[in-house]
Length: 212
Image 1 (tube, rainbow, N blue to C red):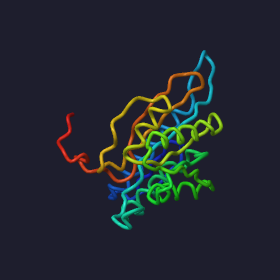
Image 2 (cartoon, rainbow, N blue to C red; image 1 turned 90 degrees about the vertical axis):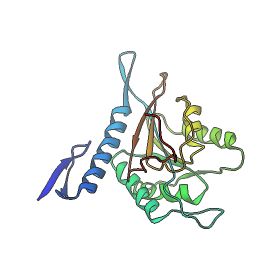
Image 3 (cartoon, rainbow, N blue to C red; image 1 turned 180 degrees about the vertical axis):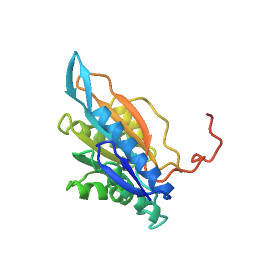
Image 4 (tube, helix red, strand yellow; image 1 turned 180 degrees about the horizontal axis):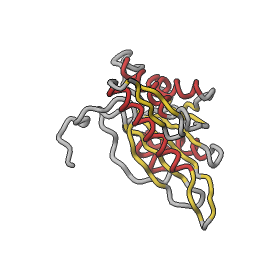
């Protein structure tokens, strides 16, 4: 028998009752959508105003070749599709990636679904300059929109900080499923919400026992 589940936007979706993985994926998508939906509107001086929402993810699982600019593995392509599915109803207005194949391919499904041409910002040896350019590109978008940023382990945390969010450590090499939603209210304090999407990361993605 099929289960009928309702997503964050009220749409019903049927899934096989014994398909635990599919059910978990639907619940993850509902969580992502709920996170974005809750973040979209905030209160400022008693008035309801639209916040700019920035969704940031690391690129999906990368292949091992070509060495200078690898694309995605099969699992990475599945994660890119999962990102598009998770944000399907979130009305993404702009997509920003680095020039590397792995970030472009991660963003490709959602960009195609939204008929968007991603903004490509080269990521060279000067990480700080890249971070500043990405932050400037985010701020150049229309206020009240939703911007997706696809970056790297060492660029996503500083981009969050450059946009007024908290200082975070670099993402571990084994972590691909983290999703950061940064709320930028007009004249207010940025707020960061963390969630996950797609297939779960390994239990110890940093290669060590984590401190709980």
